[in-house]
Length: 263
Image 1 (cartoon, one colour):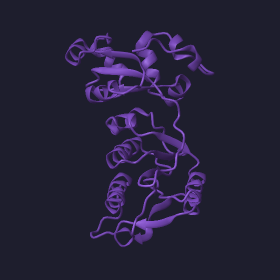
Image 2 (cartoon, rainbow, N blue to C red):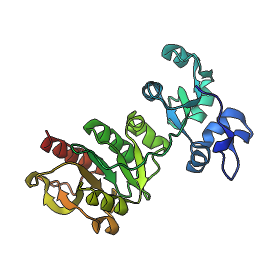
Image 3 (cartoon, rainbow, N blue to C red):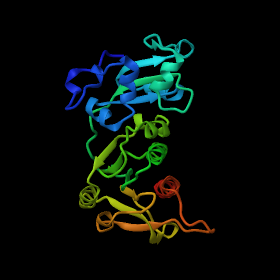
Image 4 (spheres, rainbow, N blue to C red):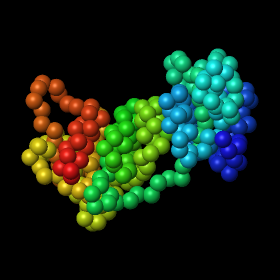
C-alpha cells in the first residue's frame, strides 16, 4: 500500500475523494467508468484476485476487508470494514469480503510480436466477461499482448477484471485503432489471421508466426475496416448443428492451433 490517491490524477468533474459519505461512496463511484477514468483507478475483489494482485507491482491505494478475511489472508495493511459496508463497496451479488482500489498502470505501447510469438487482437468486443476470458486465454497460450479496438469494452470494468482471474496483471492490454495496427504489423512481416465464418478451414492452413490473431464482436463479427485490412481469413469448421461459437471459445480453439503449429 503506497498512500492515498494523488491529486494529479483528478480531472474535470467531481473528485470522488471529496464526495460526501466517506469511503463507501468513494469506492462505489469506481463502479462507474467515468470515475475510473477520472481517477486512474479500478477495483479488485475477492481472495483469488487479491493474491494475484499482491504478487505484482501494481499499486494498491486502498484495501478494505472484513476482520476474518484480513486475518486469514495476513493483510496487515487492510482497513477493517463491516460486512454491510463491503457489500456496498464491491460489485459481487454477495461475498464482498475484500475490495481493493488499485492504480491503473501506464498504458502499454503496441509492440509487434517476436519471431516465435503472437498477439491476440479483438475488434469491438462489448461484453466485459468475454474480454476478461479472452485475457485468460491470451495468458494461457502465451500471447505477448492483447490489442483491443477502441470500440471494445473498457478492460478495467469490474466484470472484465474478475473474469480475467489475474491475467489482467500479466498480459499488457493495448487499446488501438485496429486497422492501422494490422497494417503496421503486415509491413513488419507479421502474419495476420482474421477469424470469420467464410474463412479457410483452419485445419488446412499452415499457421506461421510471428502472428496476430484477430477476433470480432460477439454479435457482428469483424468490422468492415478490419476486414479490409491486411491478413488471411480463417474459420473453425463445424461438425454439429450449433449456429456459432462464443468469441472466447473460438479464441481458445484458434490459439491452440496457432501454438500447435509452432511447436
